[in-house]
Length: 84
Image 1 (cartoon, helix red, strand yellow):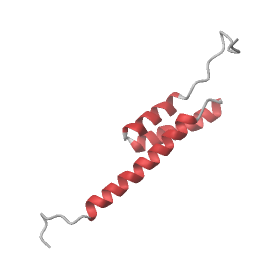
Image 2 (cartoon, rainbow, N blue to C red):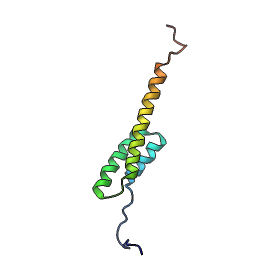
Image 3 (tube, helix red, strand yellow):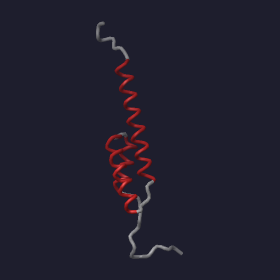
Image 4 (cartoon, one colour):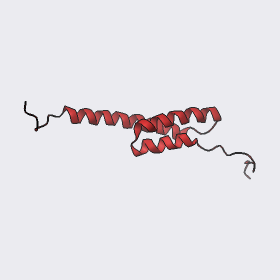
């Protein structure tokens, strides 16, 4: 038997946290990170699960680090079009 009452609201994941996770996963790291952080705060306040929010934060941070590393690697490589 399920302990779920028919009239009680279900406590699923925070919608903002899920949106942040999806955006982080799709490569929109900064917005995903911000939404995941807001979703984490909201989920903690409402007693909702925080797994997707935390995953969105981790993926967003890793995506931003990867973006910075790629940016530095591209700009550190000398280009053959500029005479030195």
